[in-house]
Image (cartoon, rainbow, N blue to C red; front, top):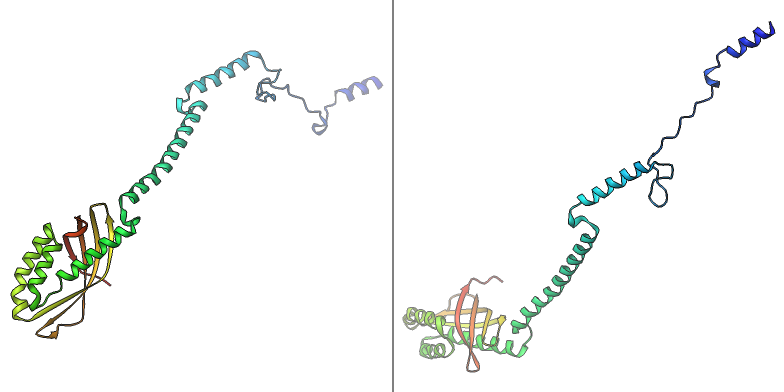
Length: 233
């Protein structure tokens, strides 16, 4: 009986909770790498060679510009281009400033503004007794298209100035030199003009705005073109 009882105990199945877990064998080539990036020593040499071949193929398939050496060269080119742009931009600005003497030559700027202001006040101020004097002043300070336009204007208004006893007085409020070179200038001029007819005022002073082109002629500035626009103040 004791032997049979012992046999029965040994053949009795164990409780599942108490059954020891079976250990699975470790898979070779699990993907873990050593400190130097290589597969552990337990990996088979064939598997390592296969992975190395795949990595080499991926490197060869990268476009040339994406490879480290090419990227370094590209970064250098971009940096050089950025430096060129930063250097070229101030240079362009400096050339523009050098060409426009109105920004750097105070004496020349003052002279052209003064000559043009005096000329405009003279040719746009007239009265019945001074029509001929005004025409002579215009011939002295105007040239080119400006002289032609003024001659046509005076031919239209001369008779009215005399018969209606009309007068016009022009005052230059301010003149700004937009651009200036050694021989040419462009200005923006603001005027106030007052008129009378038969001794009576025709109303308050009227503002006017002119864009004037002038050319240096024998040491003085002569007006070559006048464009009028309504002044807004």
